[in-house]
Amino acid sequence: MDCTRAKSTNFLSSSAIYLNLILFSGFAQCGENNSLEGLKKVLEGNSIIWLFKSTYRPFSYALCHKFEKMLGIEDNIPFRENYNVYDYRNEATLTENRYWLRTALIENGGSLSVKLTRLADRSNTTLNISLWDGQQQCFLAEFDIDGKSECSIFTVGRLPEDDEKVSNCNARFQSTCRTSVKYSYYAASCR
Image (spheres, rainbow, N blue to C red):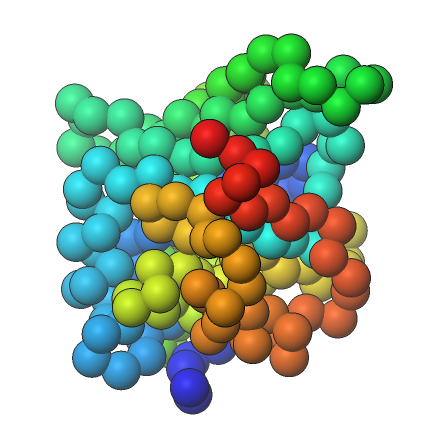
């Protein structure tokens, strides 16, 4: 599958990476089933977006990251990021939340990026999407942290049972991302 690739810029470190999902309102376009309009329809609904796989992990105690659109506000769409916090015995102890706003959607030469603002400290970041697969309901986001290129795969609705369920995103991930996977969770691991 040949899609438009976007190179990320100005990425905020820490968990901002996981906000790639908020980018949903604009992405690289691939084929009819993978069009920008198809993605917008998914994102305008009440979809849950899961972090499936990433080369970046800001902290080791947080797992099962998911993002949900909060209803009631039309502009600057707010998203709630939920994640489980684990103790030293690898048992989930609680769920924490963070809140983000999508404050700008930027089209640039056929690629799209999204500016995000973390509500807790008003930190801004700009992220880019390099692949959206409408049939497999996944997308690949690329970003830079401290001058290092990182990648994440997100899935819409639920996490996959295995890599084959999101094979197109996985193929792009393997061919694009230059570092090893540091975060990977499947349907059996997260609820």
